Image 1 (tube, rainbow, N blue to C red):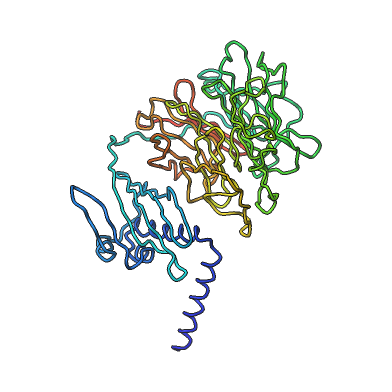
Image 2 (image 1 turned 60 degrees about the horizontal axis):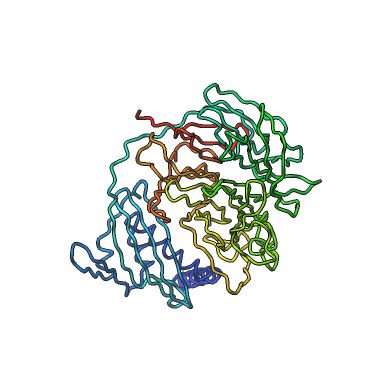
Length: 500
Protein backbone atom coordinates (compact mmCIF):
# COMPACT_ATOMS: atom_id res chain seq x y z
CA UNK A 1 0.00 0.00 0.00
CA UNK A 2 2.84 2.41 0.88
CA UNK A 3 4.54 1.68 -2.44
CA UNK A 4 1.26 2.29 -4.28
CA UNK A 5 0.76 5.59 -2.43
CA UNK A 6 4.32 6.64 -3.19
CA UNK A 7 3.89 5.79 -6.85
CA UNK A 8 0.62 7.72 -6.97
CA UNK A 9 2.24 10.78 -5.40
CA UNK A 10 5.20 10.51 -7.75
CA UNK A 11 2.96 10.32 -10.82
CA UNK A 12 0.82 13.17 -9.48
CA UNK A 13 3.89 15.30 -8.95
CA UNK A 14 5.14 14.39 -12.42
CA UNK A 15 1.78 15.40 -13.96
CA UNK A 16 1.84 18.73 -12.14
CA UNK A 17 5.43 19.30 -13.24
CA UNK A 18 4.56 18.51 -16.87
CA UNK A 19 1.51 20.80 -16.71
CA UNK A 20 3.70 23.59 -15.35
CA UNK A 21 6.21 23.07 -18.14
CA UNK A 22 3.43 23.54 -20.68
CA UNK A 23 2.72 27.01 -19.31
CA UNK A 24 4.92 30.05 -19.89
CA UNK A 25 6.65 31.66 -16.92
CA UNK A 26 4.22 34.55 -17.16
CA UNK A 27 1.21 32.23 -17.07
CA UNK A 28 2.63 30.32 -14.10
CA UNK A 29 3.28 33.57 -12.22
CA UNK A 30 -0.25 34.76 -12.99
CA UNK A 31 -1.67 31.49 -11.64
CA UNK A 32 0.28 31.95 -8.39
CA UNK A 33 -1.13 35.46 -8.00
CA UNK A 34 -4.64 34.18 -8.77
CA UNK A 35 -4.20 31.52 -6.08
CA UNK A 36 -3.30 34.31 -3.66
CA UNK A 37 -6.41 36.30 -4.75
CA UNK A 38 -8.67 33.27 -4.23
CA UNK A 39 -7.24 32.60 -0.78
CA UNK A 40 -7.47 36.26 0.27
CA UNK A 41 -11.11 36.48 -0.83
CA UNK A 42 -12.23 33.50 1.27
CA UNK A 43 -9.64 33.52 4.07
CA UNK A 44 -8.23 30.23 2.82
CA UNK A 45 -4.72 30.20 4.31
CA UNK A 46 -3.88 26.98 2.45
CA UNK A 47 -4.16 28.80 -0.87
CA UNK A 48 -2.41 31.93 0.38
CA UNK A 49 0.36 29.84 1.92
CA UNK A 50 0.79 27.87 -1.30
CA UNK A 51 1.33 31.10 -3.22
CA UNK A 52 3.83 32.61 -0.75
CA UNK A 53 7.33 31.27 -0.20
CA UNK A 54 8.19 30.36 3.39
CA UNK A 55 10.65 33.28 3.50
CA UNK A 56 8.03 35.82 2.36
CA UNK A 57 7.51 38.97 4.43
CA UNK A 58 4.68 41.51 4.29
CA UNK A 59 5.59 45.17 4.82
CA UNK A 60 3.53 48.33 5.00
CA UNK A 61 3.38 51.67 6.79
CA UNK A 62 0.12 52.26 8.65
CA UNK A 63 -0.97 54.70 11.35
CA UNK A 64 2.52 56.09 11.64
CA UNK A 65 4.11 52.67 12.15
CA UNK A 66 6.25 50.44 9.95
CA UNK A 67 4.88 46.88 9.97
CA UNK A 68 6.85 43.78 9.00
CA UNK A 69 5.03 40.41 9.21
CA UNK A 70 6.58 37.09 8.38
CA UNK A 71 4.53 34.52 6.50
CA UNK A 72 3.24 32.79 9.65
CA UNK A 73 2.19 36.07 11.30
CA UNK A 74 0.44 37.19 8.14
CA UNK A 75 -1.50 33.96 7.69
CA UNK A 76 -2.63 33.98 11.32
CA UNK A 77 -4.77 37.06 10.64
CA UNK A 78 -7.12 35.26 8.23
CA UNK A 79 -10.37 33.43 9.00
CA UNK A 80 -12.53 31.42 6.58
CA UNK A 81 -15.43 33.46 5.14
CA UNK A 82 -17.77 33.79 2.19
CA UNK A 83 -16.34 35.71 -0.74
CA UNK A 84 -17.47 39.35 -0.21
CA UNK A 85 -20.07 40.62 -2.67
CA UNK A 86 -18.66 43.07 -5.17
CA UNK A 87 -15.04 42.10 -4.55
CA UNK A 88 -12.82 42.40 -7.63
CA UNK A 89 -9.18 41.54 -8.18
CA UNK A 90 -6.77 42.22 -10.99
CA UNK A 91 -3.13 42.12 -11.98
CA UNK A 92 -2.31 45.70 -12.94
CA UNK A 93 1.14 44.88 -14.29
CA UNK A 94 3.52 41.94 -14.36
CA UNK A 95 7.14 41.93 -15.52
CA UNK A 96 9.09 38.68 -15.81
CA UNK A 97 12.83 38.31 -16.49
CA UNK A 98 14.75 35.02 -16.29
CA UNK A 99 13.05 33.48 -13.29
CA UNK A 100 12.28 36.63 -11.32
CA UNK A 101 9.40 39.04 -11.58
CA UNK A 102 7.53 42.01 -10.15
CA UNK A 103 3.76 42.54 -10.09
CA UNK A 104 1.34 45.28 -9.10
CA UNK A 105 -2.09 44.00 -8.07
CA UNK A 106 -5.36 45.41 -6.78
CA UNK A 107 -8.07 43.96 -4.56
CA UNK A 108 -11.15 46.17 -4.45
CA UNK A 109 -13.84 45.71 -1.80
CA UNK A 110 -16.93 47.78 -1.11
CA UNK A 111 -14.93 49.91 1.33
CA UNK A 112 -11.27 49.78 0.31
CA UNK A 113 -8.78 49.36 -2.50
CA UNK A 114 -5.77 47.23 -1.52
CA UNK A 115 -2.71 47.72 -3.72
CA UNK A 116 0.00 45.08 -3.42
CA UNK A 117 3.44 44.98 -4.97
CA UNK A 118 4.84 41.45 -5.22
CA UNK A 119 8.36 40.27 -5.88
CA UNK A 120 8.20 36.81 -7.41
CA UNK A 121 10.82 34.13 -7.97
CA UNK A 122 10.96 30.76 -9.69
CA UNK A 123 12.39 28.25 -7.21
CA UNK A 124 12.84 24.56 -8.13
CA UNK A 125 10.64 25.06 -11.23
CA UNK A 126 7.82 26.64 -9.19
CA UNK A 127 6.87 30.30 -8.88
CA UNK A 128 6.35 31.94 -5.47
CA UNK A 129 5.60 35.35 -4.03
CA UNK A 130 8.81 36.02 -2.09
CA UNK A 131 8.11 39.54 -0.85
CA UNK A 132 5.12 41.87 -0.58
CA UNK A 133 4.54 45.54 0.22
CA UNK A 134 1.00 46.80 0.51
CA UNK A 135 -1.21 49.81 1.03
CA UNK A 136 -4.94 50.37 1.55
CA UNK A 137 -7.04 53.32 0.41
CA UNK A 138 -10.59 53.65 1.79
CA UNK A 139 -13.36 54.67 -0.60
CA UNK A 140 -14.48 58.09 0.53
CA UNK A 141 -17.80 58.01 -1.27
CA UNK A 142 -21.40 58.24 -0.18
CA UNK A 143 -23.29 54.94 -0.26
CA UNK A 144 -25.14 54.29 -3.50
CA UNK A 145 -28.77 53.82 -2.57
CA UNK A 146 -30.06 53.75 -6.14
CA UNK A 147 -31.46 50.55 -7.57
CA UNK A 148 -30.99 50.12 -11.33
CA UNK A 149 -33.84 48.21 -12.96
CA UNK A 150 -34.64 47.27 -16.55
CA UNK A 151 -37.63 48.19 -18.69
CA UNK A 152 -38.03 46.87 -22.24
CA UNK A 153 -38.95 49.72 -24.57
CA UNK A 154 -38.87 48.06 -28.01
CA UNK A 155 -38.45 44.44 -29.10
CA UNK A 156 -38.51 42.57 -32.40
CA UNK A 157 -35.14 43.86 -33.62
CA UNK A 158 -32.74 41.68 -35.67
CA UNK A 159 -29.75 41.77 -33.32
CA UNK A 160 -29.39 45.55 -32.91
CA UNK A 161 -25.76 46.72 -33.04
CA UNK A 162 -25.74 50.51 -32.59
CA UNK A 163 -27.93 53.50 -31.79
CA UNK A 164 -27.50 57.18 -32.68
CA UNK A 165 -29.92 59.70 -31.20
CA UNK A 166 -31.54 62.24 -33.52
CA UNK A 167 -33.45 63.69 -30.57
CA UNK A 168 -34.45 62.55 -27.10
CA UNK A 169 -37.10 60.20 -28.51
CA UNK A 170 -35.96 59.45 -32.05
CA UNK A 171 -32.88 57.45 -32.97
CA UNK A 172 -31.26 55.50 -35.78
CA UNK A 173 -30.57 51.84 -34.99
CA UNK A 174 -28.50 49.37 -37.00
CA UNK A 175 -29.42 45.68 -37.06
CA UNK A 176 -26.63 43.16 -37.47
CA UNK A 177 -29.00 40.77 -39.27
CA UNK A 178 -31.32 43.42 -40.68
CA UNK A 179 -31.05 46.99 -41.89
CA UNK A 180 -30.91 50.62 -40.74
CA UNK A 181 -34.10 51.67 -39.00
CA UNK A 182 -35.49 54.74 -37.25
CA UNK A 183 -37.23 54.20 -33.94
CA UNK A 184 -39.39 56.38 -31.75
CA UNK A 185 -38.79 55.47 -28.11
CA UNK A 186 -41.88 57.33 -26.91
CA UNK A 187 -44.30 55.89 -29.45
CA UNK A 188 -42.42 52.54 -29.67
CA UNK A 189 -42.49 52.57 -33.48
CA UNK A 190 -39.97 51.28 -36.04
CA UNK A 191 -39.41 52.42 -39.62
CA UNK A 192 -36.87 51.02 -42.12
CA UNK A 193 -34.66 53.69 -43.70
CA UNK A 194 -34.76 53.49 -47.49
CA UNK A 195 -31.73 53.64 -49.75
CA UNK A 196 -29.30 51.55 -47.72
CA UNK A 197 -26.61 50.00 -49.99
CA UNK A 198 -27.48 46.62 -51.48
CA UNK A 199 -23.99 45.16 -51.00
CA UNK A 200 -24.56 44.48 -47.29
CA UNK A 201 -23.32 41.10 -46.06
CA UNK A 202 -25.90 40.32 -43.39
CA UNK A 203 -24.97 38.11 -40.47
CA UNK A 204 -26.49 34.64 -40.68
CA UNK A 205 -26.31 33.71 -37.00
CA UNK A 206 -24.98 34.80 -33.62
CA UNK A 207 -21.43 33.66 -34.38
CA UNK A 208 -21.26 35.53 -37.67
CA UNK A 209 -19.49 38.89 -37.13
CA UNK A 210 -20.61 40.41 -40.44
CA UNK A 211 -23.66 42.65 -40.82
CA UNK A 212 -24.32 46.33 -40.16
CA UNK A 213 -22.20 47.91 -37.42
CA UNK A 214 -21.95 51.42 -35.98
CA UNK A 215 -24.05 54.41 -36.99
CA UNK A 216 -23.08 57.96 -35.99
CA UNK A 217 -24.43 61.34 -36.94
CA UNK A 218 -22.30 64.29 -38.02
CA UNK A 219 -21.47 66.89 -35.33
CA UNK A 220 -23.11 69.39 -37.70
CA UNK A 221 -26.11 67.16 -38.43
CA UNK A 222 -28.65 69.96 -37.93
CA UNK A 223 -27.05 71.74 -40.89
CA UNK A 224 -25.78 69.00 -43.22
CA UNK A 225 -27.93 65.92 -42.30
CA UNK A 226 -24.93 63.61 -42.72
CA UNK A 227 -25.00 60.14 -41.17
CA UNK A 228 -22.18 57.58 -41.21
CA UNK A 229 -22.62 53.80 -41.19
CA UNK A 230 -20.06 51.00 -41.05
CA UNK A 231 -20.98 47.56 -42.38
CA UNK A 232 -19.58 44.39 -43.92
CA UNK A 233 -19.80 44.87 -47.67
CA UNK A 234 -19.87 41.82 -49.96
CA UNK A 235 -18.14 41.22 -53.25
CA UNK A 236 -19.20 37.82 -54.42
CA UNK A 237 -18.55 35.49 -51.47
CA UNK A 238 -15.97 37.80 -49.97
CA UNK A 239 -16.42 40.69 -47.54
CA UNK A 240 -14.67 43.79 -46.19
CA UNK A 241 -15.58 46.58 -43.79
CA UNK A 242 -16.94 49.68 -45.51
CA UNK A 243 -17.86 53.10 -44.13
CA UNK A 244 -20.38 55.25 -45.97
CA UNK A 245 -21.59 58.81 -45.58
CA UNK A 246 -25.06 59.81 -46.73
CA UNK A 247 -27.65 62.52 -46.34
CA UNK A 248 -30.66 61.46 -44.25
CA UNK A 249 -33.71 63.02 -45.88
CA UNK A 250 -37.36 61.99 -45.67
CA UNK A 251 -36.42 58.71 -43.94
CA UNK A 252 -34.10 57.74 -46.80
CA UNK A 253 -30.37 57.84 -47.52
CA UNK A 254 -29.37 60.14 -50.39
CA UNK A 255 -25.99 60.83 -52.02
CA UNK A 256 -24.40 57.71 -50.52
CA UNK A 257 -20.58 57.89 -50.64
CA UNK A 258 -17.96 55.34 -49.63
CA UNK A 259 -15.42 57.19 -47.48
CA UNK A 260 -13.40 54.19 -46.24
CA UNK A 261 -12.94 50.58 -47.33
CA UNK A 262 -10.78 48.11 -45.38
CA UNK A 263 -9.62 45.81 -48.15
CA UNK A 264 -8.79 43.07 -48.91
CA UNK A 265 -12.11 41.31 -49.40
CA UNK A 266 -11.93 37.89 -47.69
CA UNK A 267 -14.25 35.03 -46.79
CA UNK A 268 -13.72 35.19 -43.01
CA UNK A 269 -16.78 35.85 -40.86
CA UNK A 270 -15.04 37.18 -37.75
CA UNK A 271 -13.73 40.45 -36.34
CA UNK A 272 -14.71 43.14 -38.81
CA UNK A 273 -14.54 45.96 -36.28
CA UNK A 274 -16.86 48.73 -37.42
CA UNK A 275 -16.84 50.93 -34.32
CA UNK A 276 -16.92 54.69 -34.97
CA UNK A 277 -16.93 57.98 -33.12
CA UNK A 278 -16.32 61.65 -33.81
CA UNK A 279 -13.55 63.01 -31.62
CA UNK A 280 -13.52 66.47 -30.11
CA UNK A 281 -11.27 67.42 -33.05
CA UNK A 282 -14.10 66.77 -35.53
CA UNK A 283 -12.32 63.75 -37.05
CA UNK A 284 -13.93 60.35 -37.53
CA UNK A 285 -12.23 57.43 -35.75
CA UNK A 286 -12.87 53.87 -36.99
CA UNK A 287 -11.93 50.46 -35.57
CA UNK A 288 -10.94 47.58 -37.86
CA UNK A 289 -10.53 44.00 -36.64
CA UNK A 290 -7.90 41.65 -38.06
CA UNK A 291 -10.62 39.19 -39.27
CA UNK A 292 -8.87 36.08 -37.95
CA UNK A 293 -10.40 33.72 -35.41
CA UNK A 294 -7.34 31.61 -34.63
CA UNK A 295 -3.69 32.62 -34.30
CA UNK A 296 -2.58 29.59 -36.35
CA UNK A 297 -3.74 31.54 -39.42
CA UNK A 298 -1.47 34.53 -38.73
CA UNK A 299 1.13 35.26 -41.43
CA UNK A 300 4.81 35.65 -40.48
CA UNK A 301 4.18 39.37 -40.00
CA UNK A 302 0.76 39.45 -38.32
CA UNK A 303 -1.94 41.55 -39.98
CA UNK A 304 -2.34 43.79 -36.92
CA UNK A 305 1.40 44.59 -36.95
CA UNK A 306 1.73 45.11 -40.70
CA UNK A 307 1.41 48.83 -41.50
CA UNK A 308 0.78 47.95 -45.15
CA UNK A 309 -2.34 45.92 -44.29
CA UNK A 310 -5.59 47.65 -43.35
CA UNK A 311 -6.71 44.96 -40.92
CA UNK A 312 -6.21 45.14 -37.15
CA UNK A 313 -5.95 48.93 -36.90
CA UNK A 314 -7.69 52.13 -35.77
CA UNK A 315 -8.09 54.94 -38.31
CA UNK A 316 -8.59 58.70 -38.18
CA UNK A 317 -10.08 60.40 -41.22
CA UNK A 318 -11.82 63.62 -42.14
CA UNK A 319 -15.64 63.44 -42.48
CA UNK A 320 -15.32 63.37 -46.27
CA UNK A 321 -12.85 60.46 -46.21
CA UNK A 322 -9.69 62.44 -46.82
CA UNK A 323 -6.72 62.00 -44.48
CA UNK A 324 -5.85 64.61 -41.83
CA UNK A 325 -2.38 66.08 -42.26
CA UNK A 326 -1.64 65.80 -38.53
CA UNK A 327 -2.13 62.01 -38.35
CA UNK A 328 0.81 60.08 -36.85
CA UNK A 329 3.53 59.13 -39.33
CA UNK A 330 3.95 55.37 -39.66
CA UNK A 331 6.21 55.67 -42.69
CA UNK A 332 5.75 55.97 -46.46
CA UNK A 333 4.41 52.42 -46.85
CA UNK A 334 1.69 52.74 -44.21
CA UNK A 335 -1.93 52.52 -45.30
CA UNK A 336 -3.69 55.92 -45.40
CA UNK A 337 -5.43 57.16 -42.28
CA UNK A 338 -3.56 54.90 -39.88
CA UNK A 339 -3.77 56.08 -36.25
CA UNK A 340 -2.97 53.02 -34.08
CA UNK A 341 -1.96 49.38 -34.68
CA UNK A 342 -1.95 46.05 -32.85
CA UNK A 343 -5.75 45.61 -32.72
CA UNK A 344 -7.45 42.21 -32.65
CA UNK A 345 -11.20 42.87 -32.52
CA UNK A 346 -12.03 46.32 -31.19
CA UNK A 347 -15.71 47.15 -31.64
CA UNK A 348 -16.51 50.34 -29.78
CA UNK A 349 -15.17 53.80 -28.99
CA UNK A 350 -16.33 56.42 -26.51
CA UNK A 351 -15.19 59.87 -25.40
CA UNK A 352 -14.32 60.88 -21.84
CA UNK A 353 -16.66 63.74 -20.85
CA UNK A 354 -13.90 65.74 -19.11
CA UNK A 355 -10.62 64.98 -20.90
CA UNK A 356 -12.12 64.19 -24.34
CA UNK A 357 -9.74 61.23 -24.55
CA UNK A 358 -11.08 58.32 -26.60
CA UNK A 359 -11.42 54.90 -24.91
CA UNK A 360 -12.11 51.63 -26.70
CA UNK A 361 -12.98 48.02 -25.92
CA UNK A 362 -11.00 45.08 -27.28
CA UNK A 363 -11.92 41.39 -27.53
CA UNK A 364 -9.32 38.87 -26.42
CA UNK A 365 -9.22 35.16 -27.26
CA UNK A 366 -9.03 33.01 -24.13
CA UNK A 367 -9.65 35.87 -21.69
CA UNK A 368 -7.64 38.97 -22.58
CA UNK A 369 -10.64 41.31 -22.94
CA UNK A 370 -9.42 44.88 -22.49
CA UNK A 371 -10.25 48.54 -22.09
CA UNK A 372 -7.73 50.90 -23.70
CA UNK A 373 -7.14 54.62 -24.06
CA UNK A 374 -6.49 55.59 -27.66
CA UNK A 375 -3.12 57.24 -28.28
CA UNK A 376 -1.78 58.58 -31.57
CA UNK A 377 0.75 56.18 -33.06
CA UNK A 378 0.29 53.56 -30.33
CA UNK A 379 0.81 49.83 -30.79
CA UNK A 380 -1.58 47.80 -28.61
CA UNK A 381 0.43 44.65 -29.09
CA UNK A 382 -1.76 42.01 -30.70
CA UNK A 383 -0.74 39.27 -31.28
CA UNK A 384 2.75 39.85 -29.89
CA UNK A 385 1.35 40.75 -26.48
CA UNK A 386 -1.94 39.77 -24.89
CA UNK A 387 -3.37 39.80 -21.38
CA UNK A 388 -5.05 36.47 -22.12
CA UNK A 389 -4.05 33.19 -23.74
CA UNK A 390 -3.85 32.18 -27.37
CA UNK A 391 -6.64 30.11 -28.85
CA UNK A 392 -3.92 28.13 -30.65
CA UNK A 393 -1.77 27.09 -27.69
CA UNK A 394 1.28 26.36 -29.85
CA UNK A 395 1.35 29.83 -31.39
CA UNK A 396 4.71 31.57 -30.94
CA UNK A 397 4.46 35.26 -31.89
CA UNK A 398 7.40 36.76 -33.77
CA UNK A 399 9.87 39.07 -32.07
CA UNK A 400 9.56 42.50 -33.69
CA UNK A 401 12.59 44.59 -32.85
CA UNK A 402 12.11 48.21 -31.86
CA UNK A 403 8.40 48.02 -31.04
CA UNK A 404 6.93 49.70 -27.96
CA UNK A 405 3.59 48.34 -26.80
CA UNK A 406 0.84 50.24 -24.97
CA UNK A 407 -0.68 48.44 -21.98
CA UNK A 408 -4.47 48.37 -21.42
CA UNK A 409 -5.91 50.46 -18.60
CA UNK A 410 -8.04 47.48 -17.57
CA UNK A 411 -8.40 43.82 -18.46
CA UNK A 412 -10.60 41.02 -17.14
CA UNK A 413 -9.37 37.65 -15.93
CA UNK A 414 -12.55 36.05 -17.28
CA UNK A 415 -14.13 36.26 -20.71
CA UNK A 416 -16.44 39.28 -21.00
CA UNK A 417 -16.50 40.03 -24.76
CA UNK A 418 -16.86 43.80 -24.20
CA UNK A 419 -18.70 45.60 -26.96
CA UNK A 420 -20.45 48.98 -26.60
CA UNK A 421 -19.27 51.39 -23.93
CA UNK A 422 -20.07 54.90 -22.79
CA UNK A 423 -19.18 57.36 -20.06
CA UNK A 424 -22.24 58.19 -17.98
CA UNK A 425 -23.00 61.90 -17.52
CA UNK A 426 -26.68 61.75 -16.54
CA UNK A 427 -28.36 62.64 -13.25
CA UNK A 428 -30.50 59.54 -12.63
CA UNK A 429 -27.58 57.70 -10.96
CA UNK A 430 -25.51 60.42 -9.24
CA UNK A 431 -22.80 58.07 -7.97
CA UNK A 432 -22.20 56.84 -11.54
CA UNK A 433 -21.19 60.28 -12.80
CA UNK A 434 -18.29 59.97 -15.30
CA UNK A 435 -18.11 56.21 -14.73
CA UNK A 436 -17.41 54.00 -17.74
CA UNK A 437 -20.29 51.60 -18.52
CA UNK A 438 -19.46 48.50 -20.57
CA UNK A 439 -21.81 46.00 -22.20
CA UNK A 440 -20.63 42.44 -22.75
CA UNK A 441 -21.75 39.58 -24.95
CA UNK A 442 -20.35 36.77 -22.81
CA UNK A 443 -22.83 35.68 -20.14
CA UNK A 444 -24.73 38.92 -20.64
CA UNK A 445 -22.46 40.98 -18.42
CA UNK A 446 -22.85 44.68 -17.71
CA UNK A 447 -20.08 46.57 -15.94
CA UNK A 448 -19.53 49.89 -14.18
CA UNK A 449 -15.90 51.02 -14.04
CA UNK A 450 -14.86 53.87 -11.75
CA UNK A 451 -12.19 55.83 -13.61
CA UNK A 452 -9.48 58.01 -12.10
CA UNK A 453 -7.42 59.76 -14.74
CA UNK A 454 -6.49 57.04 -17.20
CA UNK A 455 -6.78 54.14 -14.79
CA UNK A 456 -9.63 52.07 -13.38
CA UNK A 457 -9.93 52.15 -9.58
CA UNK A 458 -13.06 50.07 -9.02
CA UNK A 459 -15.25 47.64 -10.95
CA UNK A 460 -18.84 46.55 -10.36
CA UNK A 461 -20.86 44.00 -12.33
CA UNK A 462 -24.58 44.79 -12.50
CA UNK A 463 -27.67 42.66 -13.24
CA UNK A 464 -25.85 39.43 -12.33
CA UNK A 465 -29.21 37.72 -11.79
CA UNK A 466 -30.74 39.01 -15.01
CA UNK A 467 -28.31 38.25 -17.80
CA UNK A 468 -28.80 38.73 -21.52
CA UNK A 469 -26.26 39.15 -24.33
CA UNK A 470 -25.61 42.88 -24.65
CA UNK A 471 -24.23 44.69 -27.66
CA UNK A 472 -24.40 48.33 -26.67
CA UNK A 473 -24.96 50.75 -23.81
CA UNK A 474 -25.87 54.27 -24.85
CA UNK A 475 -27.04 57.52 -23.31
CA UNK A 476 -29.73 59.82 -24.71
CA UNK A 477 -29.20 63.60 -25.02
CA UNK A 478 -31.01 64.08 -21.68
CA UNK A 479 -29.01 61.37 -19.92
CA UNK A 480 -31.30 58.32 -20.08
CA UNK A 481 -29.51 54.98 -20.30
CA UNK A 482 -30.36 52.29 -22.84
CA UNK A 483 -29.10 48.79 -23.59
CA UNK A 484 -29.23 46.95 -26.93
CA UNK A 485 -29.52 43.17 -26.62
CA UNK A 486 -27.81 40.79 -29.03
CA UNK A 487 -30.75 38.47 -29.69
CA UNK A 488 -32.72 37.27 -32.68
CA UNK A 489 -35.62 39.06 -30.94
CA UNK A 490 -33.46 42.01 -30.05
CA UNK A 491 -34.56 44.64 -27.56
CA UNK A 492 -33.90 48.19 -26.51
CA UNK A 493 -33.97 48.29 -22.72
CA UNK A 494 -34.12 51.36 -20.53
CA UNK A 495 -32.07 51.33 -17.30
CA UNK A 496 -34.07 53.18 -14.66
CA UNK A 497 -33.51 54.14 -11.05
CA UNK A 498 -36.01 51.95 -9.20
CA UNK A 499 -35.85 54.06 -6.04
CA UNK A 500 -37.34 57.12 -7.71
